[in-house]
Picture (tube, rainbow, N blue to C red):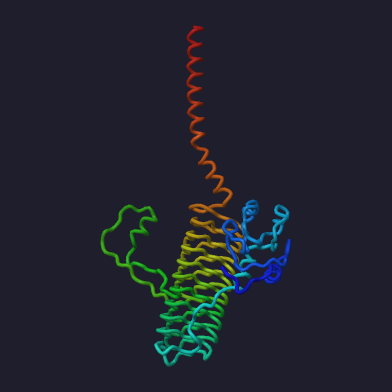
Length: 375
């Protein structure tokens, strides 16, 4: 990535809150995300401490590295930082290119109900639909082909990417970002049968199941979705409206692409839910918790504050504050990885058991022969 102009690393250190080791007047013109592939004019990022030992082969003029890297490579020009990922965030924030969004005003192809209220400073792109009694706040950008239902409230400084759906009665706070294709407020998955279902019978252990029709009757989903301030929802993620009340996503929470959040969930502040995760109905996820990629929570599971569910895991019971759970069904990570290690040892244990059985059989034979010989 090319910098807007050639810059001395002392200026970059000031920009990101780092400390120069070596010659602060050295100038760089480009940035490389990989020290192993960097060129001579690059400023290379080292955000993984495992790469520090390989910096001898790095061609870059200067390196952004964790504090302490200078001890291993005292002759290299470096910008030392305590948090390399934060340094990357600051550099990329300063250098990010212009993103193309619609200008302030309403595009002539947009369809906006006459009862809707759109701020004069908002930007409404081509083919956007805004339903009755909805409100769009100041400086909010709504990009093309997004559909906003009736009585939706969207706050200030939001960025709604193309082809999003915000269904009736949903409430969006300030500075919320919806990536393209995000769906907010689809019906929750709720059905009931007029007669007792075979599923209910099976749960009781009953074997006399019926083959008669027993239609699934839709339970109306009359609640909504509430996204608090500074929430970001990833591309093609879906958040279902509540059966009654609200599905709530707390302030500062970040939800990745292709995540499924079912009805009546209450998600706390600054939670991270990562790609392909699925959250069952009526779960509670505490502040700052992490649901890693491709993980899932069964209905009515509670993750207390600062809990972590490891990627690919399935939680079927509550996770206490600060605990890390892994596996399917998820258990304390220490227990899970202990079980994995035990399974890996199992072939050797089985070989040992077979050997012991042979030895025991041989010993029994020797004892038997000795008893016979003494008679």
